[in-house]
Length: 179
Image (cartoon, rainbow, N blue to C red; front, side, top):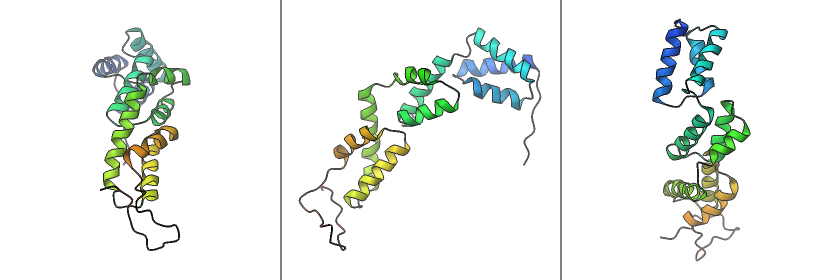
């Protein structure tokens, strides 16, 4: 199915984007994509974007900080995934680092702990090493750093040393969880 571009006037495009930006923070690259979808000429698009910056509808730092807060609090993303997404939107490393200061270290560790504790419930019947590997993969896919992942796992997945399976025991099916 081919997508057709809906052509609108540059003035109408400016008004629509200003209304959109007044409702929520928007990245310049996303606004440029909308302008292209509306078949706005590149020179008109540049003027519209410049005007939105002038009127303070667009602010890169404000957007980056809002993006970090939203993706961390609502999506449960870690700093790696957030950084990657901001780079995809054209932000430089300094702007990303400044925006990531929105997340406190305590809040970051607490969020990872909460996510891993919820994940542990879904892998409760797996042997310890499989469960640990599943938690590492899960946290890494959310964009958390390996060092904080490995520091947090023992808190949510305690090793039950009272009944460890021998490495030679092929019939070992114990889950290594405290009841």
